[in-house]
Length: 172
Ligand code: FES
Image 1 (spheres, protein in one colour):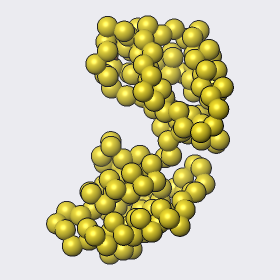
Image 2 (cartoon, protein in one colour):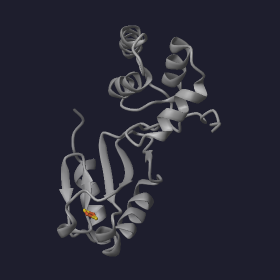
Image 3 (spheres, protein in one colour):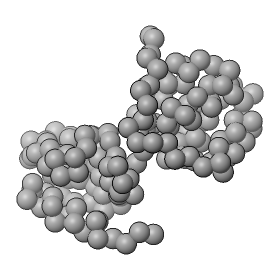
């Protein structure tokens, strides 16, 4: 399978020198391990919160593997994200129970309000939006989570009020 070189991230890369130092130390520590790429990608995602192309390039160069390979692994496993996550991570369940109760409409409303697509992050990095599979709360369908908060029996009309709550939260 040949993977295309990823397009530039939707939002500018904001990695710090300290993060890069941590990443290089991690690579140094793991590079001789068998199957080192996976743990390095996992560690890189912990350091940066996602795997931007800039980080993939450092890993490819340092590990002496083609960028296409790093990109291929990063996109193959759902645990990896190529886009940044927001301060508030919204996840809408599109499992069957939620979907039949209208979670698709809730997701559409969130896309419209946040002006982003599923898998993206708002330019101010406040919110990111994802769809997920069953989160095991089918009795509460349709369900969405924002960080650790769970919202059940959602209606489209509740979306604005819920977003407002998070917009008002002061920055840490
Ligand atoms: S299908 Fe949404 S919680 Fe199970």
